[in-house]
Amino acid sequence: MSNSIVAGNWKMNGTITESLRLVSDMKDELHRIQGVTKILFPPAVALGSLANLVYASSIELGAQNMHYQPSGAFTGEISASMVKENCSWVLLGHSERRLFFHETDDDISQKLLAAVANNIKPILCIGENLGDRESGKTQQVIQEQVSKATSALQTISNLTIAYEPVWAIGTGKAATIDIIEETLGTLRSFLTSEWGDAGAKAPLMYGGSVNESNATIFGESEYIAGLLVGGASLDATAFVSLTRQFAAAKSS
Ligand code: 13P
Image (cartoon, rainbow, N blue to C red; front, side, top):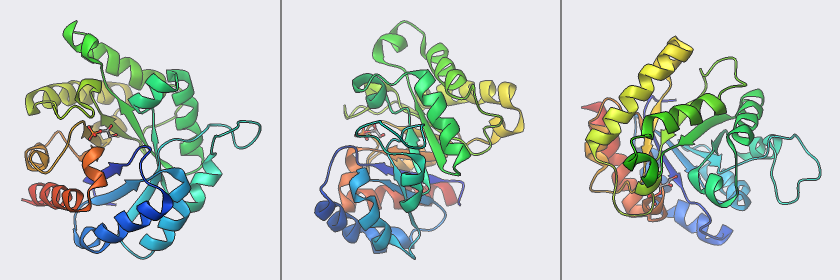
């Protein structure tokens, strides 16, 4: 795995047929971009078909969510072993899951534990909403999210964290580089003091209105190890282009 990551979170977009088409449209070019780990998070129903399509390519797959119980009466949910059949990553704690599905920090903590126990690489999503930011609570909110989510872990050596300010998601208004660097810098100090070496090394990503026009700027920042892309990951040309830009900025 490279230290840099570009991930596409498709959210609830695309049938299996559409997913296959989208990946076919980006696969070869994405595969050729080196120096960056490329992960797609399609809807769970498409994972099996896509696993065949990206087999033997450098494109990795992940699930957008999973339940922490190994099996049982949890209608509509998927477990770690189901995720593992087709992919090696999972997104946990996305703000849309927290908001629309009332996921709590405790749920997320148990999911993280289940992911790690099953050797699935988790990307923990955190971020403040506009009210938190305007009242100066950003750092407090995200440190609380991280502390609670990781409370059951022995180490965070396999954890990647994606900072996604809620006000920047789907709005076309990405956070400025100053805001991101200030937030990630303070988060890094916090992680290091809590977790030592593992905290100093945990990859930190940024997400929220990432596109072809800002990927280079983000790639030039030493604070940002990766990008978590929503809308722009649904456009093959845009996603390949921003991935290429990010990889180029990281390698220069
Ligand atoms: P957008 O890139 O559409 O703002 O979405 C970001 C996101 O939520 C990725 O998880």
